[in-house]
Length: 227
Image 1 (tube, rainbow, N blue to C red):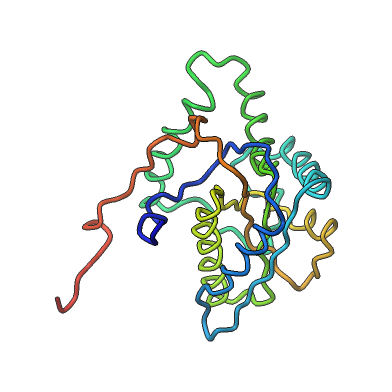
Image 2 (cartoon, rainbow, N blue to C red):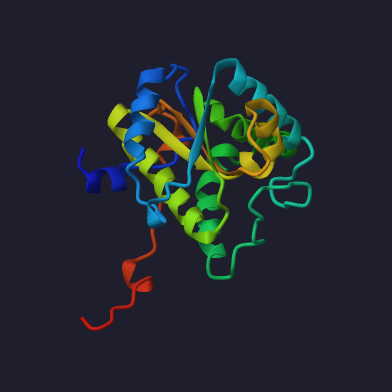
């Protein structure tokens, strides 16, 4: 698979097979991802890889949060990197277009006990969609340059995963409660928990893994200067 194909093929996977991912594969994947670019080559990232009983312990703590979190507001959350609030008026239509594609899969017409189903979905999400492994990405530097670098290494992990037949989903929701990761993974208080990645072998038949992913036309997003 070449780079262009990987970029176009990568998608967020939300249903995984139960098959475990060998440690050797995860090691190789992270090792090659260290070649991601970073400002000043400072490589401001640290990784915590969760599998097995420890992953179960962390997700159990997160699922408890789902019972009091409505999936929208951040009032009762304390992320290391503050959320900026609602999407802007420009971006909200794009968010709504994704929701319009996903909701009929999660909540088909005629779904009963909608609130219970929504809670079930939030719990599934906070279990990293039942992926057999999760990667938590942290940094010692909360400055904007390092956060951009964290984005670069996170995308690199997701692209490299395709080589191993793995699917990924970059997830910001679990890290809304960094204290849960700190307690279980012994993460220092001065190290920010930035984002997380669900990783495993995708279920190709799951509808949520196959719905179309619209993209804005390039002409709406680019301005050419001097060309």
